[in-house]
Length: 146
Image 1 (cartoon, rainbow, N blue to C red):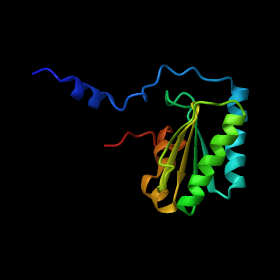
Image 2 (spheres, rainbow, N blue to C red):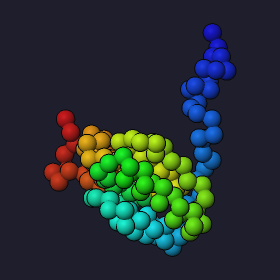
Image 3 (spheres, rainbow, N blue to C red):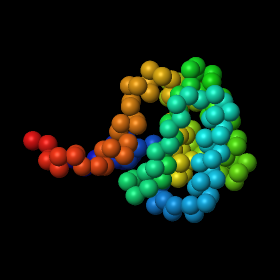
């Protein structure tokens, strides 16, 4: 039995979230936006800010920023301030998920993806371990897992 249009849509995901092939921005603009992100988070008292270089490792972004906030209101404010500052710098298409009071806010700013977590959620999802550089490096013994 062929799939119905509704089933096809459900499998394809939410409308409007499909992306065309990403064209990376020039490195100087990327570093400018990354500076705005990190300085805005520092101004808003984010804790444990980590920047991961994803260049060549994924097709959806070149940098991932992970930071911790202590309360829902702080995390929502960090996201709002960051969105305003990036828009003022010329980055207009920023998508935000979870800003209405959540343990985790995701901001998709094109070449930069920002994750804002409460401490418990950050420990649970452990994105640094998932995307960290050590996963790309072979073990010191050179042996493959059995």
